[in-house]
Length: 231
Image (cartoon, rainbow, N blue to C red):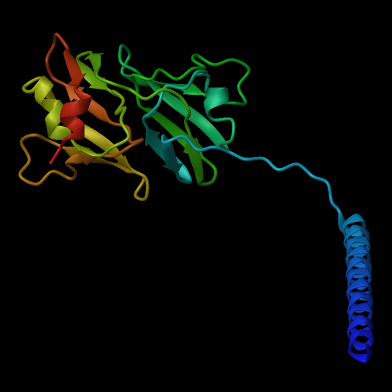
């Protein structure tokens, strides 16, 4: 009998301890929840978070003149839209017929052109360095007709290639190719007759000038698969 009383007392005592533990745990959680609510309420902030998704076609631009090609075809080709996040002063477009530049200024009342031609390379004058993000579809094979004299055909791809591979399509019809050196702010020259030309490759986003020597002109043919598999 005595043993049963002790056992019962122990059970009652254990039950009391469990009850007290549950109450304390609940109370602590309630206090903690209240504290979190108070702190969150006291320090909550409101704002807008914006995210910019970069296209694979991104071009590093530097202070001064840059000579570029668009490596994607933007749905809106207006200069204002493509360069909307860029602090630029002028865009130059080469006129093959007159063999001189046309000028676009964002401050001009009217301009002779206001859209990018994705078959061409362009000069852009920047006040400070920037990253140009060009959304849009990527280019496949391309044929670009060129006139006698200087022409600025685009280089449309996202990979580096050897220029001699696409120049095969106009062998004997050109004399020089020029790219722009942004650090030196001057042209560098490739000649098929030079033992050591100043460059032999072209990179994503770079522009180029080609001097066509054939009076009837030439057609520059880009085969994407052939150029992309450049060893």
